[in-house]
Length: 314
Image (cartoon, rainbow, N blue to C red; front, side, top):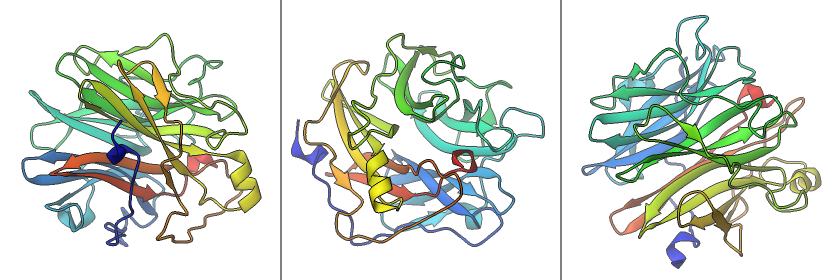
């Protein structure tokens, strides 16, 4: 395991993307997902509007530092019409490019409390104009008593030339968060792994005892690498703040059985430079730190987003 995967330095150029004070981004932006397409880095990100709806927007960059938003931060993917499963809030996008074009996987719900929230799929020939695949999600929560029975979100999708893998956050009825995986031959029809969840908290007392969430995965040299967010009950209680989310690292030979890095976490909010970020609200349960590591040239980049919880976390 190379040190490049476990040693990270925050960029002195932060912040690289901030919200635009318009109707679509007036609340927050977050959940970046980036691909390299030719010489361009392309980012999809979630935007929370002043109407309490979430949409997906696009930005691009030639260096990962200076980003240009599409059409003055107008979303490229909007909610469905009223009554559809994804008619109210879209979040946690992840995308890839394969031989058929671009595939976008996203969280959607229809009432802004996320219970029953699922993962949908849209496709595009240019990465800007998107069409939904079918009228239903491609992956849904499990039964009410399952580890992912309340809702699912934060897909991280990879195609290795043979199969599609989707790792995702699953939330149970006690709001415990773990990571599972599903596989697909075509990126449309998915089967959950019978051994889920594949990454979970080892103990309520651990640094990731509250949540193991928002995975992102790459495949390198015939093995898989995962970065994920962990939160601790005790960090939040002791600090009385929400700046305690940390990032962990894990490896796998098959994408199913994972080994956590023995010196986790590999990044801490308090690593310098540190910005004091605080968000409070009634019934607050968790704050997720979104991330997306990619390899660009000779460097490996991780794009982070501090993000207040979606209203379903309240």
